[in-house]
Image 1 (spheres, rainbow, N blue to C red):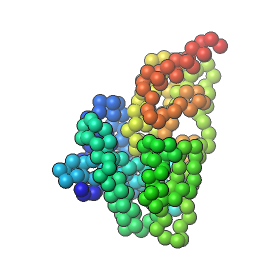
Image 2: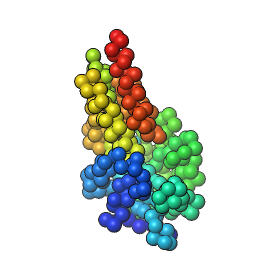
Image 3: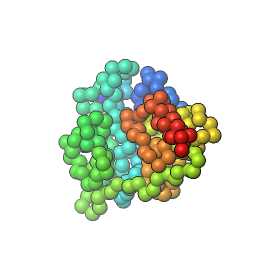
Length: 263
């Protein structure tokens, strides 16, 4: 197994997070590609894990913490680390040490860049980006926001721990209309899919629904709301992980439209 920097050969694969076999992920369109093209000159780093047969089985992407949804200084932030675990497509690469190798390579890279630590996030429940796994790799919990856990590994003594940037305000309710608002950063195809599904669902109801998209890769937009990726129907947040189907999103919007008609 080798861990290598992202090259043009594998960019298309990276844009779909190694799920080039998936029809569903294509719903995101070219959102991640646009995000990548904006961020690659701002310090974005991407590494891939390739097995002995030349097949890409894992990836990690990390950015200066100033571009993340946490606050801190002299640190890098892991947006995600992902080892392909589906039977479809390229197959299941879990249990081969790819995740550890990717994280270790990122740590060494961040040290070489002169940053003083690597920050990541995890979920306190046993699924994607498990906080428990990062603890086993020597990461320490420094903050929590619901089930989202912020962890870090400092490389020096003279660095302060990071903190989550929390939600600062919600979208406004529009009198006489149903508002559908998506906040989308662009780095995650799953959240990009939510944004596209919400846009399509809102369009079905025409003038009854006002659709608004917030590009949170714009730092000013993100800091105004303190929200990176989310979906709201009026001022109610809709759970987006795992991504709800188009039908589920449409039903959420339809409930509000029907309630509006009845009032």
